[in-house]
Length: 634
Image 1 (cartoon, rainbow, N blue to C red):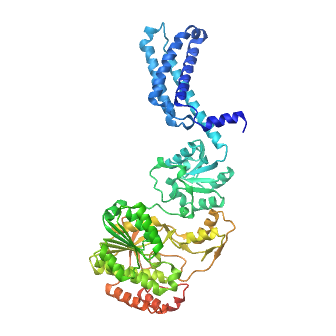
Image 2: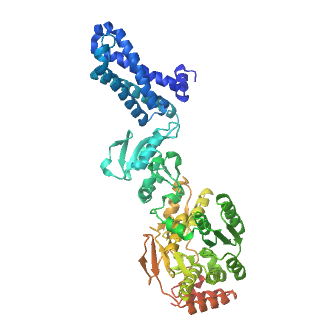
Image 3: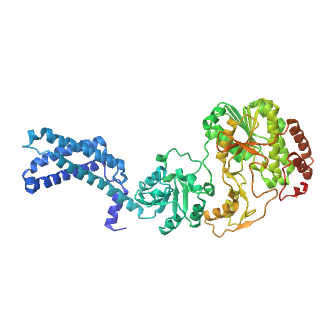
């Protein structure tokens, strides 16, 4: 633009044109002007004129004293447009010290030099202190506000902050102190009704109700930034979340993988637009990482299924505890190569073996166990997709059931201290082949634990993990990107969800507290209705034209998963999210006999015969939406 005023403001508020010496000179000038004004008002016009040169020399001495305190307090070292409360505080302290020194001269030297110099008394000194401090502070505030106004006169996004304790205040200050940022602070949302209608950092505070959305719409606010300290409360406010999503208001949260170390460190730059995973109601899970580290540090650890969603995360977390050897086994070559590269980049000094192989290849697994003699085994390898295993029960038996027995027996043979098997909520009252195969694995591991004293066998059960391969959220996301429809099997189907890192940390902690024979059940929180999940994802991505299509329950699928069967109860542990299931136990001889017969039967590939045997082993196995319903006794 050719407007001279615009060019002047552009230059002054986009460049640091004032060197430190200029700021120091301006501050000294304000002191001089304040001193002359104070003397004029105190002595009157004639008194001021008659004593001008005495006043002048006092002001020269005074300015030098003030300048020295400014240098000592470094008041001139800040950039005016980025001034903070700390800078204003330094100015006040420096002016107070300098004023006190000059006033002290009045009471100690005044009688000796009164014919030549008129040092200000306490009243005059207080006037100089107040006026100079006020002018200097106003100068910085005006410079900052003009700079902020200039930069924000363009395109900034009005935003509310959810949470107004330390975390929310830190975010608000971060926004206010960053004029180049893209947000303009418009309000806070608080869960404390007592501070409703008050002001914080110059903006209004509103109480946490669904009416906040209407207030935001009236103010044309399209962004809500959630304080990390309030993330847990926010994710449980489903009605507010639904209203925000419906109103096309963006929600910004800190990524779950970030480590947040205190309120003072949080900044609005750390936040990202939420994915649906961030909005699912989950309680914060605290894990005793010290105990886990003491268990695994310097130990030999083997992880099966190490290329899968759970197995690879287990590998990443175990690697942090510096085991002496980390042996990773999986039959998926390409994902295993990715894990290998990750370990080489992040843990170059760690001894890591990435081995491609199947757990049901007994000879190969025995070579691995004999060579590495793992002290701890985390068994995550399994075929887990319900419809696939419903169509291939023989493979489910050979991989899940027999493969687990191979690894478990080798753990005992090679002196492993602890064996942790990762099971599933689908093993409870199973309605499909996959869930039943995992229940048979639980039975064998629990029976083997009682049969020997070498290895402690621990089982962990939990539900779906967010973002795992083939899980519902990535599928929905891809369907939305393609324009739909989003396919949901049934309008009433519900599932439990947990973050992969959370699940793995609980697995590790369960491993530390287990003494052998336990089946640990994780508290998965509140179940989620999949249809609601689909609707929220569609709204979140702004895909209003995408429809939901109900396809009917898949083979072996049930409307809800359970973590305990009807005949089971739980006992508490030292962790509020982990409980011990009290289940029916099988003698080892029977468990082994059943496994051998089932394994031999699997090579007939007679699906009906295989599933009939599985139902004999697990009487609570009742097929749903499956051809195997014909085998159930009515």
